[in-house]
Image (cartoon, rainbow, N blue to C red; front, side):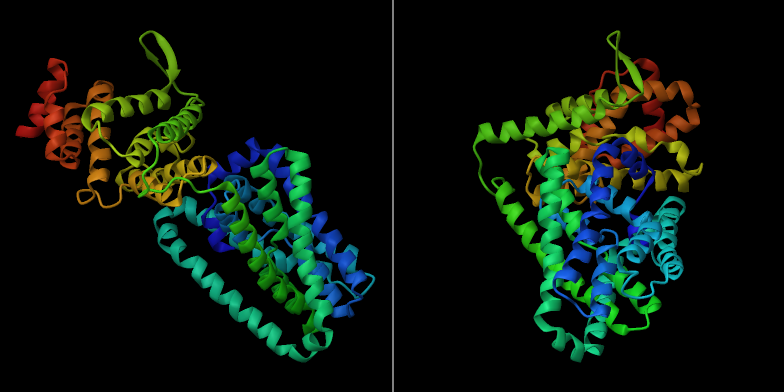
Amino acid sequence: MLSMGMTIGVEDFRRIGQERTSVIPGVVLQYTLMPALGWTLATLFNLPTPFAVGLILVSCCPGGTASNVISFLARADVALSVSMTAVSTLIAALMTPLLTETLAGNRVDVPATGLLLDTVQVVVIPVVAGVVLKAKLPTVSARILPFAPLVAVVAITLIVASVIGSGRTQVLEAGPRLVAAVLCLHIGGFLLGYLAGRTLLSEERAARTVSIEVGMQNSGLGVVLAQQNFASPLVAIPCAISAVFHSLLGSIVAAIWRNKSGQHFFMNTKIDEPDYRTRLRQALDHFDRANAEDPNRILVDGTSQAKELVYATRMTARLTQFAPDASETLQLAVRCQHIRRWTIPRSHFPAGRTGYREWRKRLAIFHANTAAEILQQLNYDEAIILQVGKLLRKENLKSDAEVQTLEDVACLVFLEHYLSEFSVSHNETKLIDILRKTWRKMSSTGHSAASELQLDSHLNSLVEKALNQ
């Protein structure tokens, strides 16, 4: 849960508000379809009381964080998946105890207060702590996050093995009934979630996302709540089995939908020129539509235009001049270099160099993730998506030719279009420092292109001072 919190930022909560018409139906289905299925299957299979309570408990848990990975693999809507998981997780402190007591209270004494407090401790507090850690210490968060999924997987595996091993005799006695009930719970969740999502949201990718969110539960939370709040250790067993089944079924669903979407474009595969141009144009159009939402406007030839849309088109125009044979990945990265940049303003970070670096790092990750979501929608191959992300994060600058080209183009656009603006708001000493840093980031080819820019006499003198002092 801590790692989940570290993946959520202010922009994610803003997106939840903007996409509430899609998020709310999915969350409602999460807390209606699955609990109803859990209660129905426990009754139909006539499960022993501890197993029935465990099945109901796990069906009342929020969506699992693994659903976000499965959504990515299934070419579903990853942004919607993250939003739904975040909302269902944060309201779990209320919904999980309430639904469990309502549906299982006639079978066994359900400690609703204990479930509520434990859910707050296990879910809400770690998620909030992760959000705060990401906001206040993004560098620390970035270092921890790559290792968090592995730690979580190992921990869940050990917990599942321990729970099932300790109840081995009872599991064997319940046999097919218990396994079938848990399996039907998740199959029903995936199937009914898809049908309901298709009906309510009328869009294939959204329906897939809802299916995955509903079909995959936070089984680990179910295990913890069962162990800490019920006298019988058997209550935790359906939750542990659930962790295995929802992962297997999720992987199968992802493979089916991924193949159905089709993978026709690979980095190292020769494709027809019309197809290449068509999909590139579609991607650039999607990037432009995102940037056209920028509320910040600038005048270009007497016309008010979205600031980041203007920047994007200037980047592409400069790339065409600087590297006319640029690869598709580089063209994509250049166009989305600042995609939706206004959503993470500099003012949200501390003043000074440290705050500036944190802001730039956050932006790089945000731009890469935003671009990835758009490219996934267009069925781009993962290899291209990853390469675009690498370019946007400026990985291996000076050693990767394409990363260096992207940096050269960005520097040239700055010198040509934005240096004049900077010269008004900064003193000469600051400007010279900025120009020196800009020059150091450029290659020799970039230097040659910069020397050919048509700058006014004042800006030319600043560049000369920066290079000669």
